[in-house]
Image 1 (cartoon, chains in turn purple, green):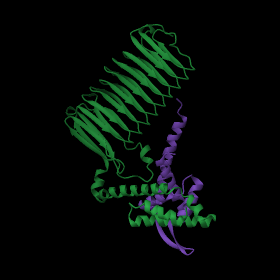
Image 2: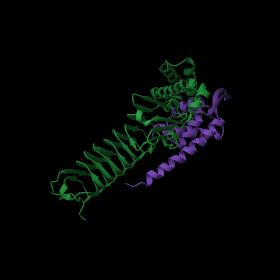
Image 3: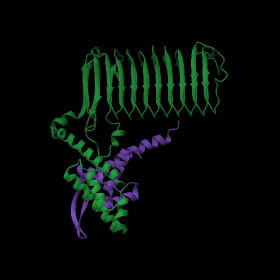
Image 4: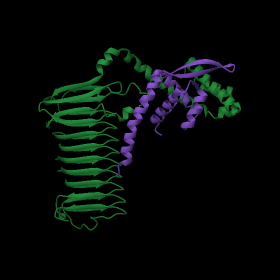
Length: 103
Length: 339
């Protein structure tokens, strides 16, 4: 998959997963891998970007005697999911065009 | 490699980053390893091995960091919010046609529409938004519209590729006493009903170009992966129409020099073509159409594979060389007076 496209898709998957509840690095990585193939370190830059763009916030909680960083989706993150779906609808139109166009 | 070794190697590989950034990365991966061990009941070594090489992890971290730097570089501009907002929106520039000798447009991911308007003026309109900003200039008869490199990376970056909303639109006199060179990418170009005194060059990629009722000193029209349709073109100089992986249609296209039609994996459909030499090349699709003169006017070179070829036995040695090639498909060329 095209790198730019894959990036957008992974970001949208992370945001969607966060709508089901706050999550942390390892769990997100495991859940995203169920949907799209990616290496375990891929999510670090993705989460950094989402945090920098204000789509997610993070906070630290104690868990099992150590600290764990949790991520939470923001209002902006919800909007970003809607944007993604709109963009995808546009792409589907293009996909239909390409699929049907016979030389 | 155990966890401590991995984190130490990571830390030293990230020496160019600040203490904070190194700590942030170390915390993230330390947590990841620990959670993975707990979840899968695997050893430290197994958990570390699943992360990939230290180099690939470093590459991912550096990538994220470079983008952040890009964003903060764009930040100061955003602080002048009001000033910037004024720059956004539909911009329209009108200049006297007589003062322009050359029009030069360089856009990206943005369709271009070129149409005829009043005799006296050239009107250029374009939409500026957070994704697209342009530099406009008119110096020494050269009108230039150049899209600036993108400062802000959108979250998904997909809509920009497909947005057809913010087009560049150029309105010129029916008789344009200038050369025109317009280029974009991933977006269509449409131009019709204009006589360009200079050379006409239209270029895009991954989107269609429609050109009709145009004349120019010479023409070069190029796109890729999409249909190119040309109707009613003429030029004293050479005309080249080129695309790829799609159909190319040319009707009433006349050059007093060489005429070249090229595509691939798409049909070439034509009628009423003229030129001092006519070249039509594609692959995996037919070349199909009719030429305006009798067969005796043309001397043909042709080749296809796995398909019929109506030029195969063309023995005439006429003044106009005709070069037709495809593969895995038919060549069907008929001539005036022939069935």
